[in-house]
Length: 93
Image 1 (cartoon, helix red, strand yellow):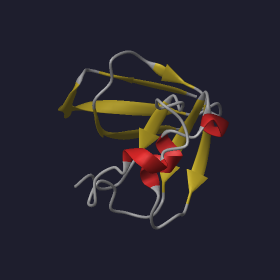
Image 2: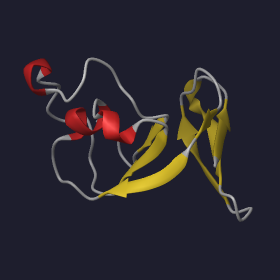
Image 3: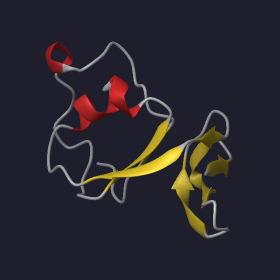
Image 4: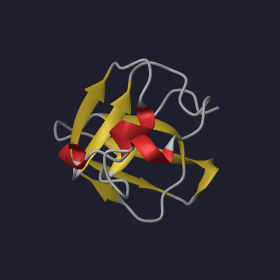
């Protein structure tokens, strides 16, 4: 799976799956991202998901919106940096 796009939230990005399916959205990318697409249905804990080394190299889809409404508690992160290749959300607050 590959995500390609132009680095701004106003531009389109494309998620292309191995079967040729293409999903279009808005996003911000520094460079194309590649990885296994996985889902999380957690209603909270997105900072921990973003910093969890078990998601290394994966593209995480947050199935439960919204993401970003309560900030980040840096004392309870799973790691020191984001490990996933990309994060996909339906709503970013």
